[in-house]
Length: 185
Image (cartoon, rainbow, N blue to C red; front, side, top):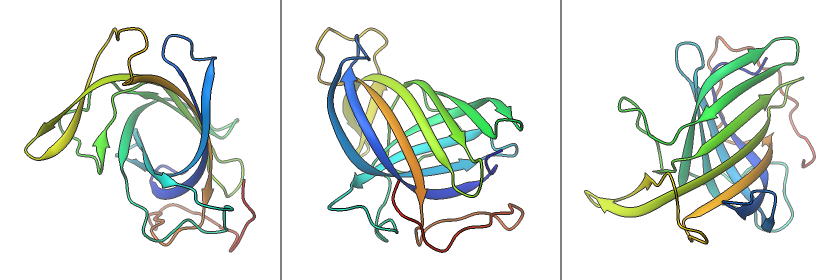
């Protein structure tokens, strides 16, 4: 089963689709993500975009990546047998939680897999929001029924794999044996 607490960088393949027709892929890209799992039972997961992957993907994530847009998930199930944890993405940020980057309200799910020593992520999501500013910070508010073709409504299909990163963190209580280097996803 994936570790219950961590901060990791992941190299992601992202396919962007139409909100109303998520199977209709409009574009593809590669981005760095920062995934963070926390909570007394590891019940929260944030996934933040952290910038495009420039050039050929290396063995390490860039040192200076930081969260830009963050989605948050709540644990809905775990399977020791399959080594997976599944999270439901949230359209509203819980009041007691603060995230790095701008919160992205989203529908969908995330499956974390850790069959060995590398965490993998699969995410199917769609989101629709309006943009604004509050106290000098960008905010995004959920729109439950967006207009067709809205620029702020789309679907994402994400597949990501953990990469070595200077900002990686696993609490001492988590047993994590890592290979020193590995080839890209």
